[in-house]
Image 1 (cartoon, rainbow, N blue to C red):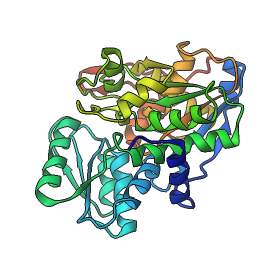
Image 2: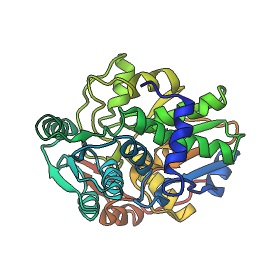
Image 3: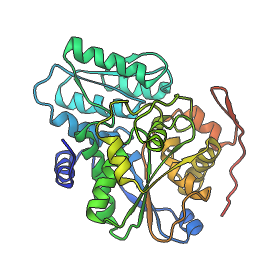
Length: 335
């Protein structure tokens, strides 16, 4: 099905009382930097610590009688599916690559799911998902290319505009496109003039590269502070790619150094612990890659991060990401 605004409102009713109503709070520091109201949608306050619960709940609710569920994930989607499956009395098998941080793997296992580490990329994990569907009859819940998942994530857009109808720009972390597609559909259906910008890291940004190519393409997966934004979009992508192509006003990349600094900003200025993927919107603004003339919001997507790595960042230590060293420095206010 092609998602509609009505479907997003229906998703909002399904998830009500479990995964909705996260705070939308101002960032005084970012307002001082931009000269306009800057709001943070705190999806890190979800029961599983990430926005992915919205789409997972909506998708599992619509499955009917199935043997169990499976998905591939960079971490947070798997956590959402595991939570939703347990609430529905279903078994869940979550397939992930070796690049997924241990903290996310442990969090999924704690919810009772069977976790399988397969290969070194999301494509490797996806191959195991496809085997489980074909041979064991499990129902797949895509992390992004699923209408029910997209509609669940789109409820964030409804909430932002319900709380602040005057928002002019929404900055959305961009990975497989489920979040960006859903939020853009909701926001632009309500206010066609609103600007929605997708932002990713400059290491292995599959949706960004696909949009540039005009078709889904593969991108090499590399270690990143924004590990939640890794992974491919699927060469047979049916929904999130065309929706991002048609609905996003712009896509932007930020560097690991810019993500590092933005993580420090969010922690020291707003006292928020969050994953690197959460801060790409802040990073783009601080780096001068986005200009804001009016009220803006970004989505703080999750808090399920490696705390040792986070400690390195906030204390200004260098961080090794595969063969890439991000030189650290103590936080100093820049505005």
